[in-house]
Image 1 (cartoon, rainbow over the protein chains, first blue to last red):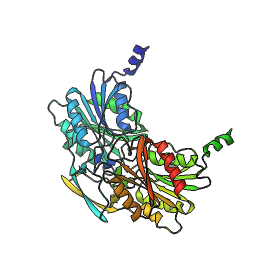
Image 2: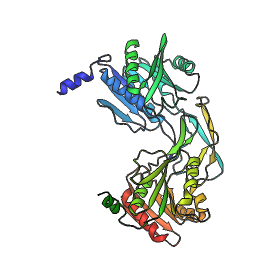
Image 3: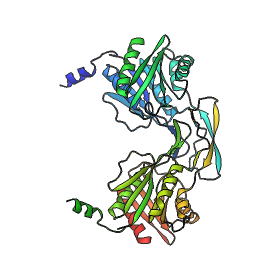
Length: 225
Length: 225
């Protein structure tokens, strides 16, 4: 019975024997022991991709920011908080992967200083100094003998334009564009509607639940890598 | 059977017929459509207080920031995101309450401007302008014929000193101090260990799960109001 169950999991076999590394969820950038900057990523798309990769026969690893989701079966999950922690974990794991999917909504900036004590309320206005976080997906894409690297572009306007330009600038093999200005799809919602772009073409995946979108993305990755 | 169940809920009767309003959870202060500043409050302490208030016979209302907790039975829950939304909802509801417990971890500051589009990554460093949020608990405490008002002081050092000074400065009737530098209690943990202070005295509640701490706080409120 166990062998049968395992066999059905790997039924499509599109990524049989491949090793897939996926980042998911938001990062949290600490201001002090209690406060942080984060974003509305639920992690659902990344977790759905992990499930779809397992179903396609891949050995699948998640590097996940803080989310409220169960780890999919047969997936090894490493939990991290900040962008720096996520980068470090990905750099440890990326040498052993064939396909890297950067689905996490990594904070672009972090506070320049993390205060060791809770910041006391003081003046009526204040400024927060921020520094740019490392770019995880382009770091991976630039590595020698790196994996097939897939990025995401969550945008609120000129979505396809920004996505294609991001793919080229970061030397990605594929990018998945979605319009997060529509709150019925994308961040924190059950459904998604994306356009998958690669150097020679693009394909729009009609609105569907994230599991169905994830299966189609995995199929496109298998066909284009 | 239903009458029996209801009777057991109101068994202590310490707050029979009283109306209790409780804020809980963090607030989220938007930077743009996807990013926000928040904090590690899980909402558990506020939700435990709501359950304890119901058990003590009170008509209980929660104003809750974004948390992953079920609404306790017999509690009316209003969901909000930002400090401004929480203040507005509390001001609508406070005229009809006898006891106000400000358990939410309200963000002290919010971004001065909410960008309508996702902010693009640009310079290596940037600054974020922040403005002070309104102080919900002192606004309520200062209102004419206001309720018995209970605040919280989550501190990482000089906990009792800051708590008593906060109680006096904000004209609170009671304040509950906890040390959030100890990650085994307080924010996002199942247990808590607090000191309850009022103008004439104080009492430390030994480490216990939040339900037990909440029942003792409700008893102290009933005895001192």
